[in-house]
Image 1 (spheres, protein in one colour):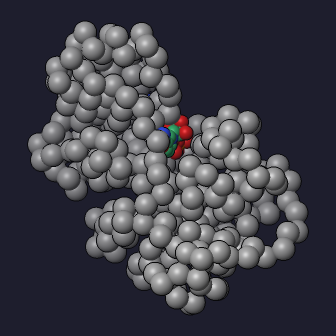
Image 2: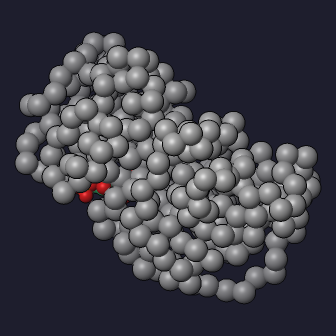
Length: 296
Ligand SMILES: NC(=O)c1ccc[n+]([C@@H]2O[C@H](COP(=O)([O-])OP(=O)(O)OC[C@H]3O[C@@H](n4cnc5c(N)ncnc54)[C@H](OP(=O)(O)O)[C@@H]3O)[C@@H](O)[C@H]2O)c1
C-alpha cells in the first residue's frame, strides 16, 4: 500500500465529486489489497481501495444531490470504490443525506457493514417478529449493526463473541450472549430460524445443529462448499453466500434508523488517512469492536 498525489477526479453524468471528511475500512479492503476479495473485479490501475465515505458534495452532475449536501454511502460495490482519497468521484445514487444528529465519522462507519446487515436481514432473509436468530461475531462491524437491526425488526437475538464483548453486545439489545471461546455455541442454543455467519465455513457447518428444519444460514465471510450444501439439504436447511451491493434506497433506511436513534454506531478507533497502514494492521487483528474510521 502506498500513497500518491493524483489529479482531482473528473465526474461523469450521474456522479458527484465528494470532498471526503471521513471514511471507514472493512475486512474486504484487506482481502482485496492481498489480491483476494474482489481484486479480480478491479482492472483499472492504480487500484484505490475503499468504499465507505462521508463528506460534502463539491461538484454535481446528478439531480439527486446538490453542491454543499453532506452525504454518505458505499461507492460502487462490488467495483472500484476509490474511497481512500481526499476527493472521490462517486455514484450519486449510492449515497444519501447524512443525518444532522451524527458526525461524519459515525456516518462513514455505517456504510458497507450496515448495508450488509440490513440486506441480509431484510432482503436475502426476511426477519419477522418473533424470529429466533443467531448472529456470529455480534461485536464486529457487521454484527453490531445486525443485532440492533434484528431487534428493530422484532427478532429474539442470540449472538456470539468473546466474553470481553459480552456487555457490549447485550447493551446493543442482544437477548443472549454465548462466549465462543468458553463453550461450544451449538450446546447452548437450538431451534433458530436464521443464522448470520460472519465467520468461517466450520462455524457454518456447526451451525447446522442449531437451525430448525426450513431455516436458513447465510455465510458472508466464507464460501459454501458442496459438502456443506449437501449436509444442509439433508436437514432441509437453506445455506447460501451473499454479497452486499451499493444501494441508495437501503442507505436512506439506514439514515432513518440513525436519525431516529434506533441504530447507533460504535467506533473502535480513529486514524488519519495518512496512517492507513496502522488502520489495516488494527483491523487485521480480528478483534475490532464496531468500526475503524479514518479522517482526512
Ligand atoms: N459478503 C459480504 O457482503 C460481506 C460484507 C461485509 C463483511 N463480510 C465479511 O464478514 C466478515 C466479518 O466482517 P466484519 O466487518 O464484521 O469483521 P470485523 O469487524 O473484523 O469482526 C471482528 C469481530 O469478530 C469477532 N470474532 C472473531 N472470531 C470470532 C468467532 N470465532 N466467533 C464469533 N465472533 C468472532 C470478534 O469478537 P471477539 O474479539 O469478541 O472475539 C470481533 O469483534 C469478514 O470476513 C468480512 O470480509 C462480507
